[in-house]
Amino acid sequence: MRQSNDSQGKARKAWLIVVEGIASNLLFGSLFVWSILRNPFLALFPDWNDGMLSTIFGIHNLFICSGILLGGQLCRRLPSRRVYLLFAILAFVGMAGFAFLPVDRPGLAFAMAFILFCVFTATGVGIGINVVQSTTIPWFPQHSGAISGALYMALGVSSVLLAALAQKLLPLIGVRYVMPVFGGIILIVALLVLCDRSSILPPSASSETAEAAEGLRTRQMLRSPAFWVLILWNICLRTAGLTLLDHAASMAAAFGGTALVAMLIAPANGLGCICVGTAMDKIGMKWIMAIGAAVMIAGGVLLCIGTLGGGTALIFAGLLLGGFAYGGSSSSYAASIKNRFGSRYYTQNFAVSNLAMGCAALLESTSGSVLDASGSYFIVMLIVLVLAVLAFVISLFTGKAKL
Image 1: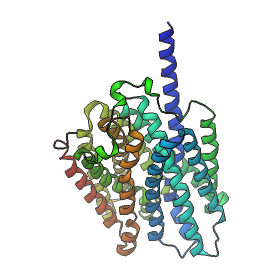
Image 2 (image 1 turned 90 degrees about the vertical axis):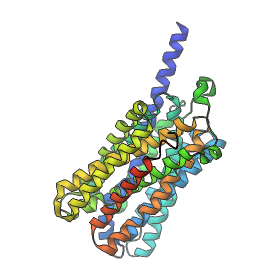
Image 3 (image 1 turned 135 degrees about the vertical axis):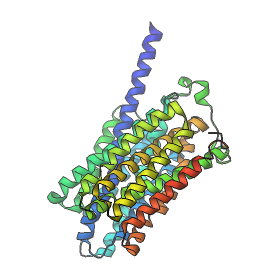
């Protein structure tokens, strides 16, 4: 009886950790509100342009990658709950600072926006992502894909919820004060999560199975062909997905739609996270990689046709398919790193594997300049299609890489 009660207690604790992880991931989607704020910022600062805003969007993803790497190192030396608190403080400071952007000095305002959104907010969010992922997924060694999918789905859902909130707040408080509101939300929710003393903690070594406790060190992972197939595939799909997220709102508006409807890409992203993550537990990463790339190819084809005059409906359909593929690539990639290389060093391996995010951010940051130079969304969507085709070709090497 006592053993049964202990098992039930551990199960309840594990599921509570999942709930708290999902609550935390609901905070990270606030960064994608940048897509909603693009046009209002351009109206407030006429000296800014699309290329400048895409640079901030892309570089902030690079700083998220840096934050994930930093989080992996900090978790080796500090309690994970303290590292999580650091995320909340950095994100709050970065977002609250937008209230002080000087309207009469656009150059200084852009420099401040870059530092606040990238150095503070994105680094903080990267730290938070590492802590939440690395302390939640190992609790469920047999369902890594499903749990990773649930976490990333929360990120996708939060994007559209917070985007809707941003739309409501813009006419009431102005574009400079939307970010501070989100910063306050992050700080409050993070403190509530930390009120549970058992939150944001990895499973103890004694509670792990022998299989779950095994794993390759980071340097061993980097020598594995499987890692390079995984990361190159993820870079292609992640770059394509970030490009869609960056331009979804403005592109939809340019073709007669609404920015908020375009943000339906976010729940599509969330649906892809949970569906693909769960499917990965059943059919394996080999098939997931090919299917994910194929879905992104279909989305890219629809977007190219839509931007050539095929209509708004095709653009929305392409965005939904692209969002689904992007979400699925994120959740399956995070889980596959744990499944393929073990959980023992997952905190560090997850951090290093997210170099994919940094590479994708650098590549995506050029999309705004491509749009400025060409004046055509078709060229940008053609890049998305080419990246999806490359991802499909890479997926054909899974057999040799023993995935």
